[in-house]
Length: 230
Ligand SMILES: C[S@@+](CC[C@H](N)C(=O)[O-])C[C@H]1O[C@@H](n2cnc3c(N)ncnc32)[C@H](O)[C@@H]1O
Image (tube, rainbow, N blue to C red; front, side):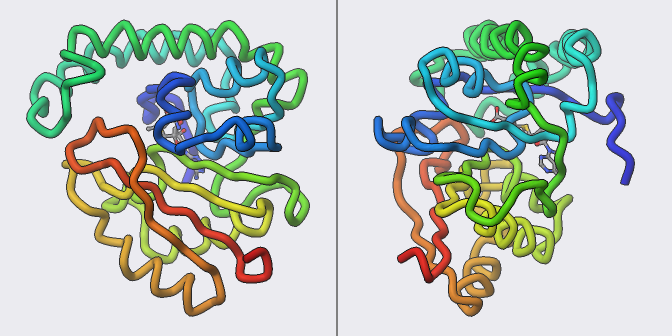
């Protein structure tokens, strides 16, 4: 399938949201991290400024900063309108309203945009698409995947999820995925079958609560470790 900009609705979360979504400790933040499907999130930019080691991959990184910026501005109001229409699906505490959410997300995306061209040159933003990643085995200590796997369960098959998790575990010693809900704030239809299949293949997996909940009920992450790492 061709990845074209007119199909993309760029939306990126902040560094603090990443830390909470993945329960990242100081030790985690000091390890070598792969951010898979990071899109226009500010995690890579802020972590790099704080001395961390991270590579983000996303098919979005085929495009230039200006192309991504224009697409963010084209789609921003559509996303805000959708959030208004579906606001009962979300928990409005840390972010108190749709009106407050817009500037918070825009600030994260502006941070990303300000770092993007330099980060591309430094090899911190690479074009890659799951289920295939251009890295050696065990190249990273930790792979994190926010708001891609499980969230798009209607669009992405169970097999795609299993292959993507196998690939994340090939390139990384530990993988964390958040959230475990699909769109509509319902439990992903693939969660249980995918966990059963990866466990059969010898991966250890664990679901844990995290200090972040925006989609109602979305306060759990999945950690997967290849059995030889346990
Ligand atoms: C909803 S956004 C999440 C962005 C960011 N992780 C966050 O939480 O703010 C989903 C991202 O997945 C990316 N994506 C789409 N197909 C992908 C694939 N096959 N492999 C990796 N990422 C993909 C999209 O380009 C988009 O940036």
